[in-house]
Amino acid sequence: MKILLASSEVYPFSKTGGLADMVGALGRALVKAGHEVIIVTPLYRGIQAKYPALKKVDWEFDLPLGWRRIKAGLWELKRRREATIYFVDQPGYFDRAGIYLENNLSYADNAERYIFFSKCVVNLARYLPWRPDVVHVHDWQVALVPVLMAHEKGAGWGNPPPACLTIHNLAYQGIFPGEAFELTDLPLEYFQPGAVEYFGMLNCLKGGIAYADLITTVSPRYAREICTEELGCGLDGLLRQRQDRLIGILNGVDYSEWNTNKNKHLPKAYTVGRLAGKQVNKLELQKQLGLPVSEAIPLFGTISRLAEQKGVDIQLGALAEMLNTNMQFVILGSGSPEYERGYRDLARRFPDKVSVTIGYDETLAHRIEAGCDFFLMPSRFEPCGLNQMYSLRYGTIPVVRATGGLDDSVVDWTQNAAQATGIKFFDYSARSLARAIRKSLVLYNQTELFKQCQKNAMKADFSWDKTVEEYLKAYQSIQGLK
Ligand code: ADP
Image (cartoon, rainbow, N blue to C red; front, side):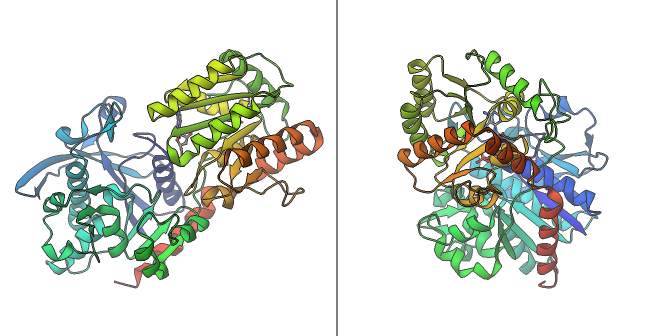
């Protein structure tokens, strides 16, 4: 099958979160399964310098964008056993310090930037000599692609391939003032509640949900949750209408990146059969972060965007209580300044128990995953979540709120002690999280049980082979539709 993937971020070229990991790994897994894949993504600042093998493609975009026309170039990166990447080169839009924002402020022209990018994707899908059998777009930035394709079908594109939209996080919909609709150059009939209009505004994700042949999201539980008023972010009505075309597929983990055996980021390799090496990583991490170095003190960690979704408020509440016990906590993250301040205050209150690193640091992310005993993920909601799956592979027991992909990927100690891989809590409250941390401390002190849990966790398999099979089935299900 020929599959065209489109995403505003792709690991290792650009990344702000799980979206980049997923698209990069999906491309690789599809190629491994014998398919042809092109991933289209913007050429952000720094990519060209880092990847000198990029080659210019003989292709020029010259596309309408409202009352103007915008030009862009195209670069290609061919890699062995990997998807081919096409980078859309529009320096005015993409040669910037950030991807979506700078100094915590979103770029004012994000609608323009990603509507243009979406048009480039449609242009490639329609005119490339390499004809895709399916176009698979990810999140709001390219969610207008299925709408634009449907329109072009009526305007001379005889038989466009089916379009699949994956929602990685329904909370981000790409909502802009109604005037931005003009940039789509679509007829006004699309600016109505059954299409892209949302209370007088343009809603990119809504358009994709209305027009895609198939909608997927990144865990089965989240697929159910987004059809409810509580987690539907205002689109639950439309999602319920389209429920027959909505499925949840749990993301896979790229174990070639996230492993404890051959990993350049880790001080010491370890495996499920040789767990002792994990302790070395723990001691090294404590040393690196300036905490008292001790095997006996249970070490908790978090790596996260500091956003409301991630349960920062209940985490700060629970830790303020629990740090009076014998435990340590390390966090790596960045995001909202008030949350950053919250963690820094915590570190000031408990200087010998808490380490806070504000920023983005891949090496430290691996070291925290490997060095901690427990990984805290108290999300308010979590479409899939990758860190808990990385933790599992690293033998670091995830302590998670039972929502979305967290619920789908962790087996709770209380519910099933023999097969437990982690600890779950249910209420979204500091109290429930504190109780879960207390439970973790009990587990930590029962050495044999704790080891068993670690082993179960490390053996849990979330490899891409399984995930990719489900995507292929999904693609096949829409092939006959057109
Ligand atoms: P989300 O996509 O909602 O941010 P996920 O758990 O799905 O959450 O994916 C987050 C990804 O981003 C993981 O690969 C995680 O390791 C990484 N990540 C998040 N924050 C940081 C950070 N400050 N430094 C390094 N990696 C980070």
